[in-house]
Length: 216
Image 1: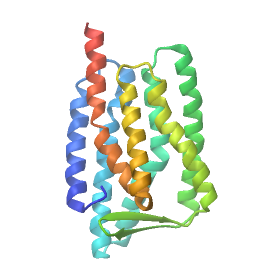
Image 2 (image 1 turned 30 degrees about the vertical axis):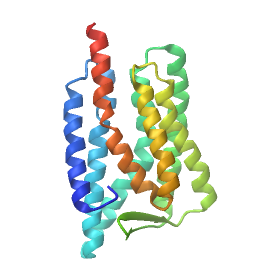
Image 3 (image 1 turned 90 degrees about the horizontal axis):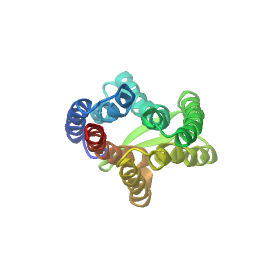
Image 4 (image 1 turned 135 degrees about the vertical axis):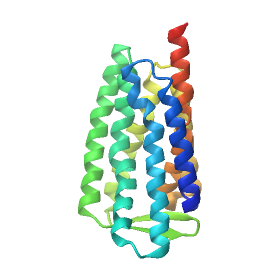
């Protein structure tokens, strides 16, 4: 999380608890990956909490590198694949499923680009005020182009899905991205992940609606 180690650990615990609750609302195997999303963000917030501690002490450089890459891999490599895949698994309308397949392929390509960047280029996390800034030694044009497709693969699936309430998730993620870009552009990776983590609580609400509809 983007404020302190304590906030990151607390946020990770709360979001993970929501993930446990979301599992109780799963009625089909196809919903399981979507229900894991809060766990995904909880784990990510725990990793950034550890990063806060290691950056503050400068005594654990190896652990600092490990949690840095855990955070960034989940955000940049796993998320652009996880979103279209989890939404596609729940989709039952053929045309929408085909569109989501295209977004999944795009997400895999973007994931590969980010994986290459994480391996090939240097990344330096640092505490700047009340935020963690990730400084990338990556060509700006490459980052800009990749980010456009990243947004497409991590936001559009929620609007394409025919699942009840899914579009609300998309709206909240899109708004949080805009707010982060305007007010926290220097800390985009950390702050947007914070917003997305909080928003992931809505996964429980979506699954509860799906289960209620099926029961009715």
